[in-house]
Length: 296
Image (cartoon, rainbow, N blue to C red; front, side, top):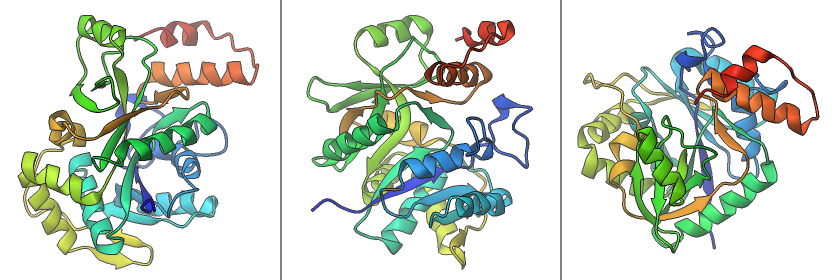
């Protein structure tokens, strides 16, 4: 019997590189860039066949996030942070929440600022991810690189689909070598048991683990929301990749071949718009946009 899989949606990013679309009151996950649905809503609907999700966001955006959730009639728990502490601290709090509320569940971590062209291929890749995680209790989802991009991390695997390592944002010559040898773009999507993530934090980022425990001990429930207090210690924001993933040598790797892209910059957004237009057979001829879309 497979465990219950709880999507943990990261919706706390401010997306400063997409200014002026993104401002303090309108973070990137709440933008409606591909139609009437926001990036957050698209992310939620993509995993609606799984358990009720947990959404991580900043307190200042909690009401807006809740409104976006209600618009698509989905049940979700919102974990609202008091400060932008990075994904390591946020996911540690989410893992502590799941260990307490749903101790037998697994957490499927998903950023909410991505575009996926093929939803069916995405769901199939999630099934592969579950199978890849069965042995080691953890697995990462990587996308075949379209070009040697230096702003993404890369996942390395052995010939049997096991994790061999990570390379974070390499220089272009190394990125070319990684692409040539079958490395995958790190999508930031991974599946694991909460206890495994917490143990990795204890080993590699113990200060952040301790801070998360202190924060979660003061959590307050407000309806379907969980309000997290500020940390008692001041810590610089730290990503989960930097905190533990770069050191991780356990688990499996699955491939997401579904037209995935991280909408982190204007060039990435324009490339995604052009792909959408091509699928819908809509002709777009903005010379400036086409020039920008070729930027790497």
